[in-house]
Amino acid sequence: MSDRAQTLVRRLFDAINRRDYDALPRLVGPEYVYRTPGEELRGVEGLRGLLTSYHRGFPDLELVIDDMFGNGHRVATAFTFRGTHLGELMGVPATGRKVSVHGTIHSRVDAGRVVEEWELLDLATMYEQLGLAAG
Image 1 (tube, rainbow, N blue to C red):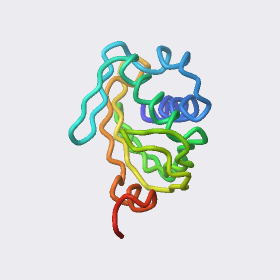
Image 2: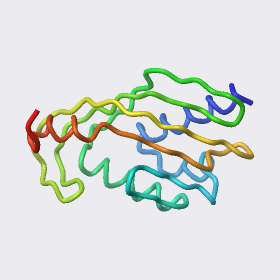
Image 3: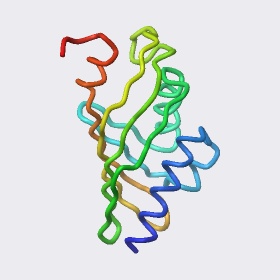
Image 4: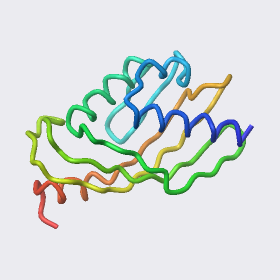
């Protein structure tokens, strides 16, 4: 299952990079849960809302997979988040600055779809690169 699970997660990254929100229901289960410190989103629509806000803030957003490994139904992915802050995000007006920050996401796959994810994104570095925090 590990190879199939990794392939599925790669497809999800590809759909995010292409802004192909119509692909989400094929890749993410209806019971999908996304977690990050201080936040939890549920379902395809929750994920779509999150991605829409990030793409609005970073229209050229790209997630680059740096490393990936899996064990059964679980996949761990290290990635780089790149983009130019050209729109409002989380109440922060556009700065015009480019960011490149690292993150990890742990995904659980069931019945051929991603059903649960836990993400950590280096927001401290992102805020520094946006000029919102001292480095």
